[in-house]
Length: 477
Ligand SMILES: [Ca+2]
Image 1 (spheres, rainbow, N blue to C red):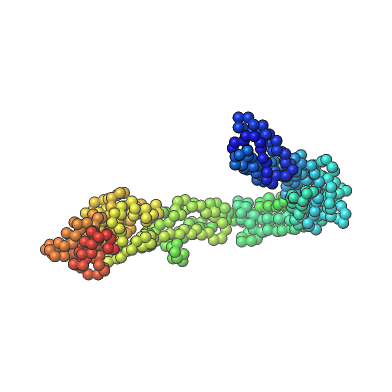
Image 2 (cartoon, rainbow, N blue to C red; image 1 turned 90 degrees about the horizontal axis):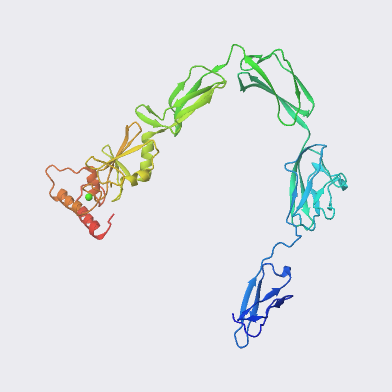
């Protein structure tokens, strides 16, 4: 912008003063003065021009801070307040910030569980004394008093009505329940009897006479027979009197039954192990094997290792779920690939040209229990970036190295088993079809690979032509 002889200011500014028409080396300093309330966030324009030149427009906006004295929040000093029926409590509100001009608040009770001591038994509009930012409700203006048990909400509002906050006051009746529990001295988790005595005033004394003997699921005698009278001072919170008994005839015993079951059919129990009698209250440790063989079929669990079970009175049962390993392998493979079982051999039929061992491993993503071993058509082990071809095998083994399942791979058009489809495969196809070596028999994997037109029967002329087109004209399947 260039300014020469004068400034022209026009536009929508009002109540503004613009000064600064000093011209010094073509630089003008312009000062705009306007009321604070007019500035906040608005866009303003000043048109500036000189004699004989086009006017330029300067646009600007300004953000101003919170006006001094404005209220930003209100807080109540009590957190999770709790009073009893008949008790009173002072609530204190603080208006923020400390520089707020008007720190007046109003209070409102929204419950019959408490009352204020103001008019009509409710807290009413209460003005803060001028110039203070803390209001304490005193006995004249509204101490809160518990009326009936329950949750009472009290809310405070700032004088401008822009801010408020509530506090929930829990009112209880000052009474608690005393629980008398008869337990096994050796294991307090074995509870023989529970007696609830409700409505006991906090601070009062509760007396209970203990029976010297007790019958429930066996005979019991009091562990401390000289102390039949129990005295308990009722307090706020849990009130419990534990009475210990000993089983007549010694510690109770129980057995633990461990069941290995079929995860997909829980009623199919694979094995049952019952322990010798164990002392109730002790903990039984059972080592769960990762796999088990049942009638020649392997099962595995993800819940193997040492499992702990607390021995309790009555029935103790541990259930461990096992998965049928061959079924699991088949399920995973069938979910990822098209398979076929023919003459007792399992085939994976839809492996693409150029598929590596690592790709198949990644695609199957078997649980860590399984180990996959790959071999090419010649029986040599292949790994990682090696490509599979027709006649390659993939063997799933468990961690003991035992074979679970073998699959033979078919790559359509790959007659030689190198995983590629090219001129060599065409030549071999022609040889197999028209110049079969003496007694040549199509191996099923190679037959499936060569049978690119349909799937049944022996490969022939149509299959040869289709593979040729596949090599020279682009994919045919
Ligand atoms: Ca090939």
